[in-house]
Length: 113
Length: 158
Image (cartoon, rainbow over all chains, first blue to last red; front, side):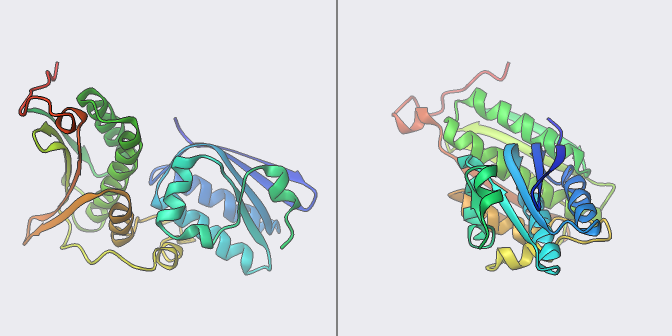
């Protein structure tokens, strides 16, 4: 399955819904999407990863890059993920300490810290 | 001994091809579900690393992936024509941030891939041969060896 991307606005947050596989082949599409959002002034992003079936370190690199871009504008990038097999790679790489990871979009949108 | 061998052009799109073939071969060999997910990610990391190295050093060469099912368990090897591997990085999060380039290049960091493999798979070995590239070897146990099945049992590849 290829990568699917869609965005919607919830209050002052932009929710990016990602589905399918994020790997070395598809990660550039996600990177472009995140760059476009930041370029258009959307600095508070919630990336909903509940529909992601596969994520590798290239995809992680794109998410970290997105985080750096929004932080440069005092923004935020929150992840929504409850899938153990996706969470595992965040734990292995120590990125659970870098990204706020939420169990639902509502929780991520409501978070303010 | 069942063997599946793939030779792939060093293109990002074929990393998925390698994952799918290796997962199918692993399921056929009887690898437990919990290890199949691990194998999918590990093969993806190893192949993305190889594709990235080839893109820099040997774009015309093929990446070789082998899946061997024998007395040792299920062994996947990914051979590339890149230079000798560096040590797996400690600060993966910091290193990952450096791999995301705004200019459109998404070259996987080979050392980050090794760090992920180290954390993911119990049996990982990286060997380098001067002038010939590196081989990443990943190994998982198969249930029949753990339960005292007949050593050397050959699974049909058909």
